[in-house]
Length: 351
Image (cartoon, rainbow, N blue to C red):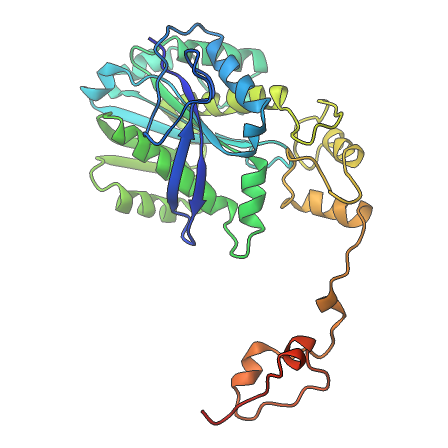
């Protein structure tokens, strides 16, 4: 029984990047699409074929839902609840200016390592698209001992956090996403004892963070090129990369404008990607929602091509700093901001 489901996450995060509230919605299921609930997971009762993954992703990517991040999970193999298990974490799409960033995890019994090696894994970036598809099909066909989850972080969420009043950078987002996925696996009843992670940022700092959060795990390894070193991470890499590829192919622009899917690799250094950005920019509204506005490539093109906006505050000169009002020797400004004039505010030294 394949219980793969997509959950849309409508979540708010506090200043520390901790998720405060999450509401999940089943996007595709057994005739009850759109059913909402606050449960940690929803499951489809019908048997799924190998095309269900594509159907679920397409349903998500072609609706207005693609503005919100989501997760897609496999069934939890029963053997993973009895045997000691290891888990790998990797991501795809960290650098591109277009499309989502996808975090992938895979987990299974440690004693199944030889079987996993037999798949012929290596870093997903070194494989052709056909090879990645073959390997992901093998992963989906191994539900008796191998589970996986992918988390899709949309361009809107990425840019919204990075351009917010308090910067929530990509490293912090990556860490929080990975930590949340580990928690999901443990909460599902998996007997997780070992964790292998492809590093984001300094390895030693990330490892100490994970060891503090998950003290019950027997082994945690954070290292670069983990997808080359550990087959469980290689499997996670395949899940993340294939999901991102499928999402880009099916992505429907919410702006309902004509667009080309010939956007190249999505990386800022790709001439095809840059050309796509130049052709799809609006002089007022900027780029479609599949573009990460927080990337310097996008910002530079907006500064060059889009209409310039001058705010009233930009025209004010000699505006004093807030701290100057708490100084006993506050200097009188030549031209106070109209806010202080209209509110008749004055400097007070004696409270």
